[in-house]
Image 1 (spheres, one colour):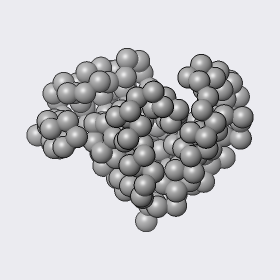
Image 2 (cartoon, one colour):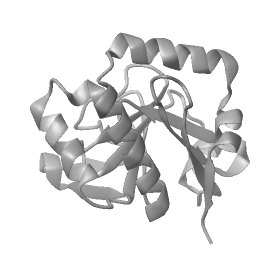
Image 3 (spheres, rainbow, N blue to C red):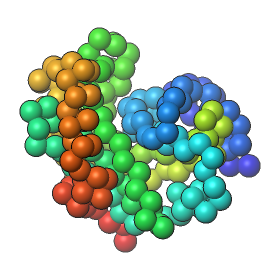
Image 4 (cartoon, rainbow, N blue to C red):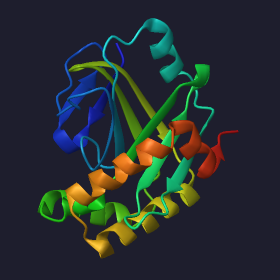
Length: 187
């Protein structure tokens, strides 16, 4: 059985077991910094994930792309390319942490240095179906950190962020965002 020790919450995350942390309520992805591990974490919620899809997500990544939107509110997008054409897209809003001191401390810690590890937790509702850990290129982390600094300087609301995301989703697909972003490949 695959398992990983998560020091931040002092528990074990095990494949085939319920996640001991809050999971996304709906299908899609959620990026967190400092929870449940001390670095970047992507919770990928795919109910009824079939074996082919899970195998694709557990296979080596082809690469990933980082994109900062050119909107009034800068949106940080990560798009990860898996085999079989699967793209995992997530975005991040640092301003959500402004009223949450522990979470803001996690972001400040992340911004203080290059923390390039990212954990993926593949979920079918509350059940952990797979876990991946990869190292991202330092240049990609620096681009992300730059966007987070811009977001924190603007101090926009969650509602403004959601409106901007919806406008982006109406115009651009995950493939578009991947192509528009700075692409990074593994060798």
